[in-house]
Length: 272
Ligand SMILES: Nc1ncnc2c1ncn2[C@@H]1O[C@H](COP(=O)(O)OP(=O)(O)OP(=O)(O)O)[C@@H](O)[C@H]1O
Ligand SMILES: [Mg+2]
Image 1 (cartoon, rainbow, N blue to C red):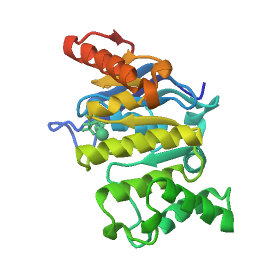
Image 2 (cartoon, helix red, strand yellow):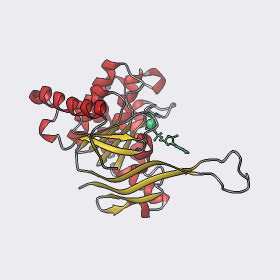
Image 3 (cartoon, helix red, strand yellow):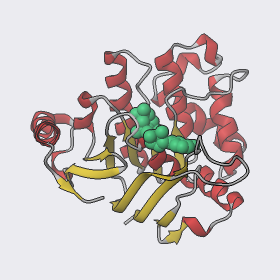
Image 4 (cartoon, rainbow, N blue to C red):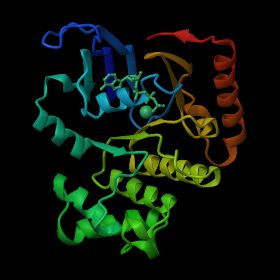
């Protein structure tokens, strides 16, 4: 297995309005509590749940952007909570691609430069090879004619395509995407998710994608639903019904059915 979370919690100390400002009297508020979650290589997971349920917190913990309060997080057996900040940054650059809702492209740089700059930090490709990979990825996401456009010269959907190319640039084993389609219209959102799902499979990367959008769920292998920081999992290991080519309709209906049953009846296995 690739990624293993055990007993991961995140708590924040909330300010106590009546308390002594000089003393830490606030209450601890637990916003995430995941007893056990395993992600296999190349698996594609839809992370769903209402606003405030902890989706971004979970993705940020996996990315090493925030530290969990307790628990263990292993990537290929390596305990990530033992790493210092520099080591975590390195790991994120080399093994994890992160796609944000708001893209976070560097504004003064072209699409191509945005991808190249991300590759510069990892350093596994140089010179011509680096440029070829960057161009190949931009072409793969449909931006062959937009490589020299700066972010403000690109549509939202095109910017998200650059962000996808950039996230895949260093051949990460894991791609995290936090509501990557929230700023796109329905048709564009679907096209982006199909592309992201396909490109992760082609490049051999696992994908964890948070979304509110149920139409995207069939493009994933599995859904993990968060509720109040804990998780309920609706459909496990749907690899046999991957949504590609001919088995799209059966995969779609099975996953959507599984998802809506869990949502409607509040049923499902509470694991977290
Ligand atoms: N720095 C912080 N300090 C205190 N509480 C926080 C902090 N960051 C997040 N939280 C709380 O953690 C909970 C989970 O937040 P999170 O952003 O992970 O939710 P989410 O599922 O991503 O929501 P959305 O769908 O709106 O993006 C929220 O209730 C939020 O108020
Ligand atoms: Mg969020």
